[in-house]
Length: 165
Image (cartoon, rainbow, N blue to C red; front, side, top):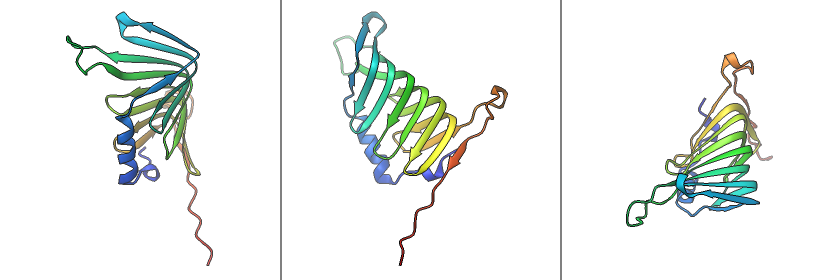
């Protein structure tokens, strides 16, 4: 289900696009680096900040691009896997789920299981959220019918209050 009520203005989408080009700062209680696998594993109260975007979780696994010979600019973060009650926010919305992936190269955030997406007073619940930071479009899916969790997306949309005359 595309969330029509979640479609940002062109200015908002441009703002997220600008965010994805900024550096990512990560803080945590513990860090393990596996150089041979191009991984950095952050554990405990993990917070990743990129511009005004925030990604919070119990654990983050950061995947690095391979460095080309000569140390070209291709090195850097390609994706981040998050687990342990994941919380993601931009200036316009917040989302949470049990796990997630931030595809840094593609500008896509995906959250899975027990997903709650909030923008203002509007709340959408589902099993999976795919948020495109470049376009500002989001898609929420329900659980598969065979899962026994209902397979439905639920939304609560609060109309804007009209000013009193």
